[in-house]
Amino acid sequence: MLIVDAHEDIAYNALRYNRDYATSALDIRTTEINSKSVIDNGLACLGHDEWLSGHVGIIFATLFSPPYSHYSGDSEKMYYRNSEQAHQLAHNQLDYYLNLEQKDAFQIIRNRTDLDTVVTSWDEVSNRKPVIGLVLLMEGADPIRSPGEVEYWHKNGIRIIGPAWAGTSYCGGTGDPRPLTNLGEELLENMADFHMILDVSHMSERSFDQAIENYEGVVIASHANPRFAANLSTPERLLTDRQIHNLVDRGAVIGVVPYNKFLINDWRKSDDKKTVPVRRLAEMIDYICQLTGSCQHVGIGSDFDGGFGAESIPFPMDTVADLVMIGDEIATLGYNMQEVEHFMSKNWLKVLRRGLPE
Image (cartoon, rainbow, N blue to C red; front, side, top):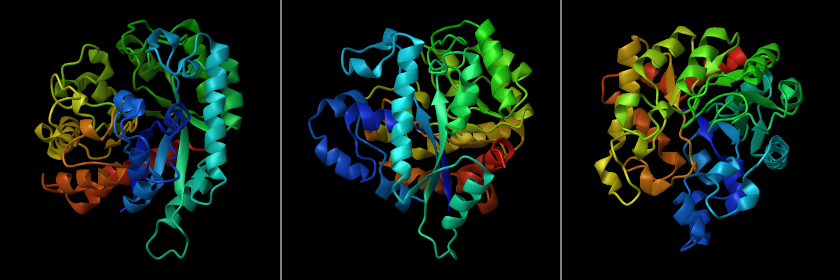
């Protein structure tokens, strides 16, 4: 079964921690024993071998860098103080993906033809070697120095833009309650002109409401759990029932996140991961289905390796290869195989076929 993962921070981790994702997560862990990388970011969950063995054939791969206001005292070069620095950092990550594409195992998905090529390569009757497809997602829009620069990034292969991580020049985000700015409104207009997919993950509630009401293109939440699941200090990071309904009304898909902090109250990295079984994540999918009366609007957005590692994901998951466990667990809740396939890939594929150019 093909799996689509709607959020992985590949380039950021490759460049910040020198992780070689063309190898395996287990090889990366071997090179990082007792290193600061593990302290900062946890045990690696991503790697080429695990993508292949887990049939994770399509990934929304991020261009992400945090603002200097979140500087943690290490790797200062990965943070930005202004839009010029953000632009350069995003370009460095774009270059990483372009270089990765030179390897036969990867292909950037720029249009529906590319999408079909990647999907076909995973067909069991195909004689082709499976190709890992990368849909490029900009997380936090500050690298777009002005709204008119959307065209530039579209020409360079970006197909999804999330205006926020923390607050940006375009809108409030996690920990920042501001609405869309004037620039943010102009950004959405330019995104619609180029048929960009809008990712509302991390957007403040006020900017979320404005975007849902006014954006003319395809909308998703690449990585966000229902808010009831966990009591966070920044509750806007998770979706209220109203927001879930708003997204479904727009035909969106929501990617649930296998991060224990987003699944139970007061999770800490030092806690025993066995207290959060993979069934808890399956229950998030079931919750969205029961709330909305539909199985067509939920998928997976792992957020691997996004500031947490294997010690903080549901038991007994260990790497991205174990995303298949989510499907197995959903089936025990009474969903049939066709519905499971929608959760694991088909809902996201439908979104991509709506949002990508021909």
